[in-house]
Image (cartoon, rainbow, N blue to C red; front, side, top):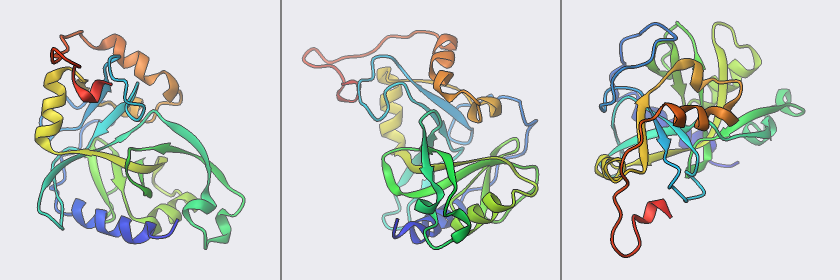
Amino acid sequence: MPGLRSTAAVVLCLFLLIAKTPAQSQNQPDQGTDKNKTAFLVARPEIGDPIFKESVVVLFPSSVVVSDSGARIVMGLIVNRPARVALSEFFPGDKAFKDRSETAYFGGPVDVRSFCALFRSSKEFKQALRLFGDVQVTFDGNFIAQRLKKPGDITDLRLFLGRSQWSPDQLQNEIELGAWYNMPAETSLIFSPTPQYLWNNLLERAAPGPVVQTPETGPAFLR
């Protein structure tokens, strides 16, 4: 996977621009849903897009300034799409990962040749951003490799290929049209041992709402 480390370094620089959110109790849901809070986006059943159909996305707690254009974006990771991959695909030059296979996740369609990780730790790391509670995200490939070998004071490290992102207006429009439920994020669900049931479980919690459709075809993102 050429270019993984350089892409990861660029994304990490973007996250260093975000103010870190105060720590909460590690299993306490984050009760806000504005841009400074961590939330789940839960796809409504009407979404037919194969990328986001039956997906659960954990949103990062703030907008990010993209270095090349200055545009603000909303970023997150799909947390319920596991897949078996060889770690040698992530770290081709490291013999320690030659015969190791892990459960990685498809984080979204943007930069699918880059990777990041979610993990839990009460300790602060300069290579990571705290989302809420003890949940942190890192795009630093060297940090991820080291912690895969020796976890130390972190737990529940999960790898993600790619990420999901929108402009703030784009995401707000999709929510208003009824493509997503917006719900508080929970640590235990982000790291669920049964991610295949996560979408159904969250869907049962969500209150139904109307889906706005155009007279001709309905919203394109629902098809």
